[in-house]
Image (cartoon, rainbow, N blue to C red; front, side):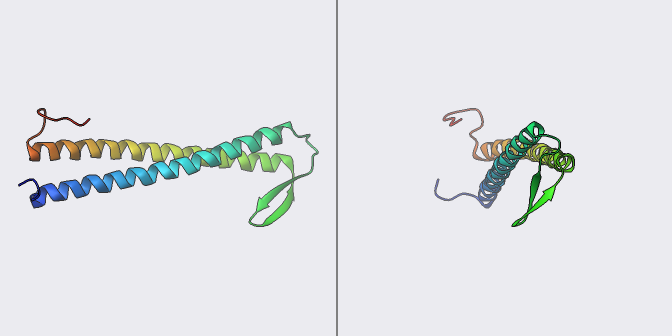
Amino acid sequence: MSSELSPQVQNQIAQIQQVQQQAQALAMQKSQIDVMVKEAEMAVEELEKAADDAVVYKSVGELMIKSDKASLLNSLKERQESFSLRVQSIERQEERLNSRFKQLQEQLQSMLGTSGGGEDED
């Protein structure tokens, strides 16, 4: 009997798996953005240490283009802000997915009649 699940239970399991996959994808995105944030922070720190008249370059694709310190600093800070907003957005999405995951899990447990008794794997 345990090998045959009702279509509703199978659907619920599929939804849980989909939410888990979405959460993993978000975690990967967040990790990548965190790396970019750290790189931008290090670049800002180094640029702030440089003299105001220092010769600086910015990377544009495969090119290095001469730039002035002030505009490059502004550009890096805007980039940091953009990354921070993306991280906040991902965190909100993660919260919604976690909530959805818990909801689906509770529904599945009630479908299987295991809510609150017997074996609990959490």
